[in-house]
Length: 189
Image (cartoon, rainbow, N blue to C red; front, side, top):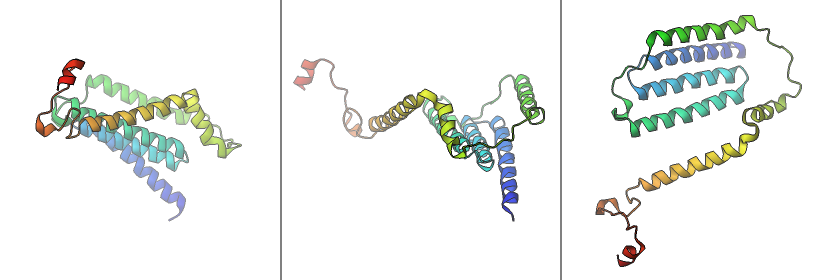
């Protein structure tokens, strides 16, 4: 098989996969499953972008959506009254409005392929495309994103340390007690 045929087959598989998993988001009865179907749909769109030659955008989409959906799944497991987000529930509110909004959005986006005259001039410096795209996406916010990443990592490490069996205030098996707030009471114990 030629490279073009392989690319076409992969693109079709990713396109079909993104539509099917996107449809499953709204036809599953579990928040947790909906989160993972949405992750699969976005990952398929990222794969399509990689095939189209927008490797940076495709990988950014996959990495960002993977992180976002996994955090959402973890939060659902921790905080939902519905155990682990797995109990049945209706995933669509205002069903007719949602269908109308989805269909009209699809038609508006799909019509761009026919109504817009896309440029065909190649980039004069293709080796700088990723750098320019990164600057366009992040601009002056690079330090903020880097700081937020380190802060999130420190928060995750702290949460794991606090939740360990040793616990924050001693071994969990020994009935640990929170330390006294008064400094004199601390000295006495």
